[in-house]
Image 1: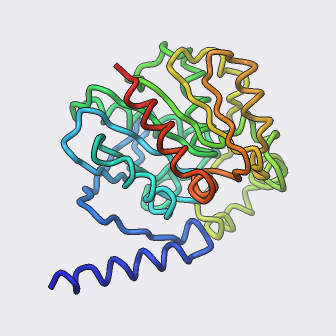
Image 2: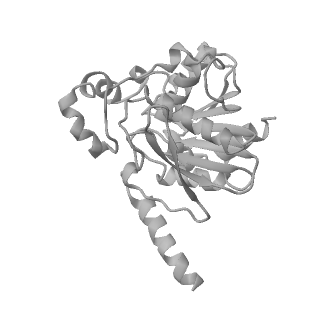
Length: 279
């Protein structure tokens, strides 16, 4: 019976790892995972998954552009952090199983606020946010716009970003052009689901303009071979906020998937040190 139970898990996990399109990956969890629904201030229902392990500390993982909480790299990170900490993953609005429409980062500030509020209401004493790529952009812009403290929802105790853009115009490839010229065209929005999200009115924030206001412990992790969000973004953020702890990994490409491929132990060690250092 045990072998029969494991077989579907193994098949689904391998299928997720072999699926090249990130938003189509549906990686399963190997341990207990509770499905949660969190409602934002503007009434959007956010799909979340809680890996409850009886810890007093919670790590919230925020996925990046054209991904979801079921992306193989997100599930990998969540499972490796679960145990010493509880872990929460979720889909941004317009992504995965969440309702609403994506805005490229503006209205998503309400998603982050709702998730942080829920975490405190569930009784977690310490909360750390780990956010990759677009998720990092949203997190930095949201917390920076609130002045690192002047917001009406509970703040995290620390934040780590992985490959976060300082602004969309500093990203590589076609992305800045898509955000600036293509995404705002309303009649093109039906095409967005092909990229993994449902798009509404575009409201791209700029973390670089507000990151200096963040007073929380902030770890910025980036790979020096990142072609999607060049490492220059990390240096720009650090220039604006010298209190940032900057970690640049040699030979590493973009986001958690790039970290997992080249420096998984280093990434996990840095994140664990951040969480363990929160008092």
